[in-house]
Image (cartoon, rainbow over all chains, first blue to last red; front, top):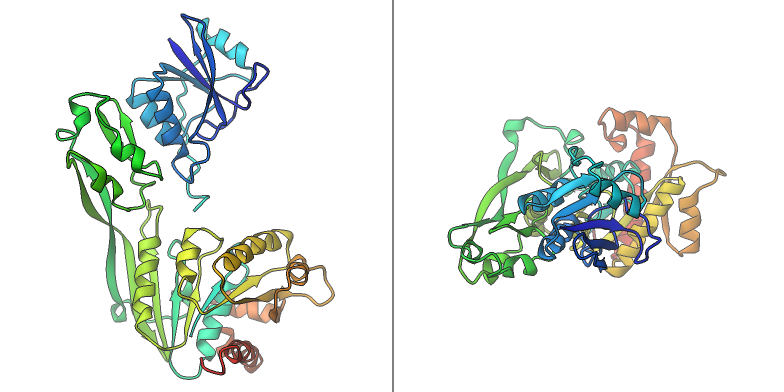
Length: 121
Length: 291
C-alpha cells in the first residue's frame, strides 16, 4: 500500500499542505517496506490544471491512497477514476495522520470542492 | 485609431470612460465591449434585440475515441496527448484518456500528436457576438454562456469584426491583467488605465502597468472618483512610476447617478461632455490630431 500526502517541506518536521494540486511536495510512504520519499510536485508551477497534473503524477507513481485536507473536482476525477482512495486528513500533523489512517480512524473525503480555477488567466 | 480602456480591479470606471469617449467622438465610432464574462456596455447603447446581428461562437474540444486509443490495449502504451498539453487538460485515467473541457485552450495539439488518430475535434457553442448601431456608434459586444470558463475566442471574434474599419475604436477591456486582457489590447494603438483611489486599486493598477510595459503599449492613466487633497494611492503610483495622468474625474454624485441608470453622462450634461471631449483631445493630440 502506497500512501501520498501533500506536504509543505521536504523534511520530517513538515506539515500537511492545505492545497492538493499546488503543494510543493508529496510524502510518499510504502506501508509494507516502510520506504519513504519526499516527491517533488512538478505540477505545482502549472499555469492551469495543477490538480489534474498532480493527480496524474501520483497515479503514475503507483499510489493507492491519498490523504489530504481537500481535493478539487478535477483532481478527484483522476484519482478516483484510477482507483485511488482519498481520505480526509485531521489537523496538519503528518505522522499523526499516517497513524490515524493505519488505525482506520480517517474518513473518506466526501465533500469535493469545485476547484479554484480561472484566477491565473 | 484604437484606444483600449483597462483597469486592474473591476468597478474603477472602464465602462464609464469607454462609453463616454465613444459618445463624444465626432462622427462615427466603434465601441467594443470585450468583457464577455460580464458585458454591460450594451446597457448604455440600447436598441431592439431584433435590430442586433447575432452570431454564435463555438470552439473546438478534443474527443477521444477510447476504442482507438492505444491505452485500451495497454495502460502504459502511450501518454503523448497528456504529456503534450501544457494546460493539463488531459489525464490518463486507468485505460483511457479523460478530457477536462474547462481547462482546455483549444490549441489542437493533442489531436496532432496522437499516433493512433484517436482524437477528433468537436465544435461546441460557447457564446454569442452582437453587432448593431446606435446613433453614430457601432456597438460590438460578446457574451459567454454560463458554465464556460474561456472567453478568448469570443473576444478574438469581436476584435476581428472591428478590425476592418478605420473608424475611431474604443475597446472596453475586461478587468485584471490575465489572458482576456492581453487578447483585448493586442491591436490597441493607445491604452488608458482607469484607477480609483484605493490601495487595492493601486495594487492591481501596478500589475496592469507591468503588462502594458511588457507589451510596449503607449499608455496613460485616468484617475476616477478623484477627491482633491485626499489620499490617493493610485496617484502616488503614477508619480512613482512616471505615468502620465490624462485626467482626474471628480468624485461627483451626478456622474454616478447617470451611470447607475445606464445613461451616458456626456449626453446628459455639457460639463461632462466637455470633460470627455478634452480627454479625447489629449489622446488624439498624441496621434497628430487624427482620431
